[in-house]
Amino acid sequence: TYQCNYECDHCFVWGSPSQEGVMTLAQIGDIYRQAQELGTVNSIYLEGGEPFLYYPIMARAAREATKLGFGVGIVTNDYWATTVEDAVECLRPLAGLVQDLSISTDLFHYDEVMSAHARNALAAAEQLGIPASTLTCETPEGAAGYPTQTAGEPVESGLAANAAAIMFKGRAAVKLVEGAARRPWREFNECPYETLDDPGRVHVDHLGNLHVCQGLTMGNLFEQSLTEVVAAYDPQAHPIVGPLLAGGPTALVERYNLPHEESYVDACHLCYLAREILRERFPECLAPGQMYGGD
Image: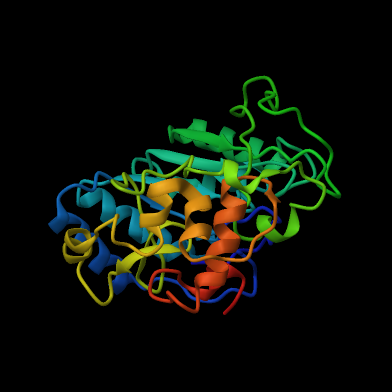
């Protein structure tokens, strides 16, 4: 789902309470079947948006994935961890199923880096033997309305991993670029985050879109099987992936002679804005609208 009870400025997928759509149990079962047929999928993560908003479906999805031999992870904003006792009850049905509970906590989600909700969720997970860790994004220097964090500084006594830099795509490309340091656009000559020619992970949304990066798709699992999509994926011939492999976001701009500014905050910033311009031309590759702030 893209639905979330929060509306964070750094969100890749424009998650918010107003987003709609969630996978059905039938769709989840179909995706699992396709993953089994492909034979190279080892683990499945349930995320959003916020998956705990659809708790019964999420819990069933975790059980079914475990039965099929997949490792299971969940990414959550831990809104449900109001106390340790309450968090234990939320997590108890997931004990023995979830191998990685990733807990988001930072100044985008809460008013402190290590929130009380995150502490409660970590304590509850420890009681139940669920492996858990935190996901923390540092606030970019110069971002309006946020205090500055030093890049890579530990957020608190080892309770959370070092803060990671945000990627300026999705809502971040709109909300957080003002005041942030920029670099010349020609410097962004590679994708620093994804292995687009041989992706080790992909994302499936409730519409069936298979993303190699959020908003950059290689097919739709409700139209073709996962095996067919993977077999047909030709990175070099893909109208967006091909240029990115050849020379990053800079090459994407040059390939299609796109209008551009002289500087951007990071590679994701340039790539995201270039893809926005190209959406009308390549709707099958740049979907869905939710990933670009639309409907």
